[in-house]
Length: 375
Image (cartoon, rainbow, N blue to C red; front, side, top):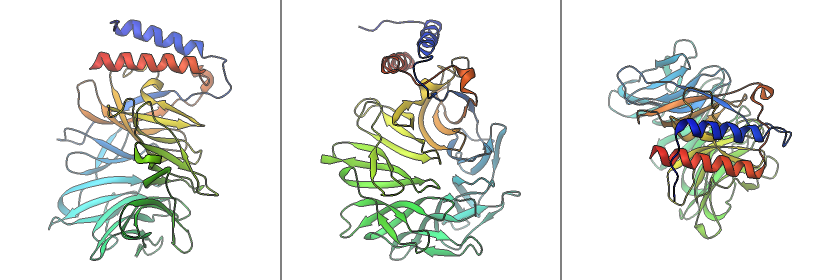
């Protein structure tokens, strides 16, 4: 049996649940305010992929890549072709991604932090991440198969990285020490594993799996921790992971209740963001993993925020040093949008310490009510 309740009642219940958490533990759960960043002129949607410590974000709309903030989006163009996509941004405001030339071929790019003019490092392919020195990593399309690459911080020249024995590799994340995380096929090309590189030699180290046959690395922080996804023992489920910076051992981050989760972003505090289903094969929701607990980000929006209860956050892509997050989801009109989640800086104002297990159950039930109501 499902009891229908109004939005006002839901807000009151939610507030009461939050209030009961006060004083139950020492660590505060982040609470967020939300900004719908809109779209580029003439575009119908926006997708967000990266956020830096200045609150600048990267992503793309229907056709072109953008750099933006809560103040709006700027189109950063192409190499003369029709399309571009933005994937990463560093703390200097440089972005990377792929842009088409006049023949339609994709090229990785880095943008100028002031003019947003695009520079091609000299290959076809895609740039997925950029560090504060301006080094890129991504996928270079070469005749023997796609390969991960890293660029030189001074000259911008591309160095093609190896593989874990198979025929292909892709760099997905790069830290300020020049370490790359990504995915590579293994010997025999039967499956692929996440990897991390040595900052000096660029040699790839296989990060293994959570017991299954497949894994991929999506992001790396300056400590050397990697997040991504891996199948678990039996290959029946796929879970997000975080690695130990010393041993490279994988820790399973679990899910929001279903059988799938994926880590997309990680900051230097070890907070991970990503996407997870709440039932087997069901709709996916954005999550934050912090200090051993995974949270549905939909339940961490400030109840006084104008967008509370009217949007659905589906995929968190990146998190900065302050805990601010770039998330993709659906707005109140059913349109796909990128949202900036700004962490409230003073937990004492929030009054929301770490919730007890019974409180988390209440939050989960309330979130389910909202989601069913929206459906």
